[in-house]
Length: 592
Image (cartoon, rainbow, N blue to C red; front, side, top):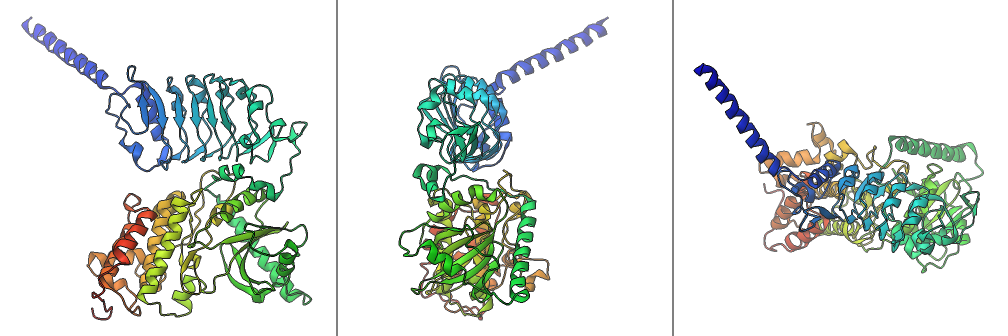
C-alpha cells in the first residue's frame, strides 16, 4: 500500500512541475502582435539587418526597431521600416495587428501582392508602400479602413483598376497611385474625385475626370506622347520598376541580336545597293533629347543615323551594337542600338529613359537622348575618346602607371556610389566590368550602361530569374538567387579593382587552369601572405602603403555580403587611405 501511495505522490509532483513550467512559459511567451511580426519577418528574404534583431524570446515587440507600441496596452500601433533594403513579400499576418495605425514600408524591394488582410486593421490611419515592386491589383478590402487618411501606393507595378470601394474612405486626405500600370475608369463617386491629376499620373491605361481623359466603354482613349512623360510629378514617382528578368528574355535577346546580324549581313552581302542600317529607321521614328544644349532637330539626327554603316561600329555587347555618330558641326556621339524586345517593352521604355536621362554626374557617361523607331531603340551618349578600360588593359597594350590606375578606380567608385546612394531613384548597375568603364581623353573613368539591365528585363516578372552581368564579375549569392543588390555591385567592383591591379581578366587562363578565378587567386595568395604578387609587374610608380590599403579594400568588397562596405564607404577609404600614401614608400614589384 505504501508503494502505491509513493508512486501516486511522484506522479502528482511531476504534474505540479509541468503545470508550474507551463505557467512560467506562458508568462514569457511572445505576444500575439509579436508573433504576427515574426511571421512578417519570415517572409523577408534580404534586409539591412535591422529586423534580424527582433528577438522571439522577448515578451512583446515594443523595443524592436521600427516598432512602436501603445504605452498601456503594449499593442503595436506603428510599423515603420522605410529604406531598410527589405526584399520579399508582405506577409498577410500583418492583418493580425488589430491596433495598427501607421504602416510605412516605402522605399524597399517588396514584391508580390498587397495583402487583402490589411483590411482587417480597421484603426489604420496611414499606409505608405510607395517605391517598391508590388504587383497584382489594389485590394478592394482597403475600402474597409474607415479611419484611413493617407494612402500612397505610387511607384510600384500595380495593375487592374482602382477599386470603387476606395471612394468611400471619407477621411482620406492624401492619395497617390501614380507610376503604376493601372487601367480603366477612375471612380468618380466619393472622395477620389477630389484628388489632382498628379495622384494618378504615369498610369497609361487610366481614364476619368481627374486626369481629363474621356472613358469609352470603360477603356481609356489616352495616348500620351513621349514629351508628356516629363511631368515632374510623374518623373519623380515613376522610379521603381522591376528589378528582375525571366530566362525567356535572355533567349529573346539572343534571338533578336541574331536576327539583327542576319539582316545586317544580308544587307551587306546579299544586296550591294546599301551599306547603311539594315532597317529604315525613318518610318515612324521620333527623337527625344534630354538636354537643350544640342542644336539639332529630329530630322538632322535621323538623317545622320541613316548614313551609318558597319564601318562606324566601335563596339558591341550584351545590350547592343555601338556606333560612332559624327554630326556636321564636328560633335561626336556614341549611338547604342538596341533591337526592340517585345510589345510590352514600349510600356516602360520611355519612363526608364527619362530617369536615366536625368541622372547626371561627372563619373557617369551622359545619356543625351534616344531615337524611338518601330523596330529599334537608339540611345545617344556622349562619345569618350579613350575607349573602354577593357581595351586599355587587355587590347591596346597601354602601360597604365600606378597613379592612372588609382584615378580610374576612384572614378569608377564615385560613379557607382552616385548610382547607389545619391541619384533618385537609386540604381543597381548589375553589370560592372572593365568594358563598362569608359575613359575620356585624360583617362578619367566614367561608368556606362547603368540602368540598361533593368531596361531590358521582362516587365511581367517581379522576381529575377536570370542573372544579368558577366561571368567572373558576379557575386556568388547573385548567381544562386538571381537577386541583384547594391552588395552584388560592390562585389563586381572588387573584382574590377583586382583586374586593374593585376592587368589580368577575372577568368584569365593563368589561374582558370587551376580551378580559380581572380578572387580565388587572391584568396590563395592571401593565405600565404603573398597578396602583393597579384600586382601587374609592368605597373610603374607603385607605393607600398597605397597597394596594401587597396588590397584590403578589394578583399572586403569580395568577401561575404555582410562584410562588404557600401560604395560610399569605399570612396571614403580610397580617398583617406589609398590616395594619400607615404611618398617615400615606393614598391618595386620585381624586387620580391
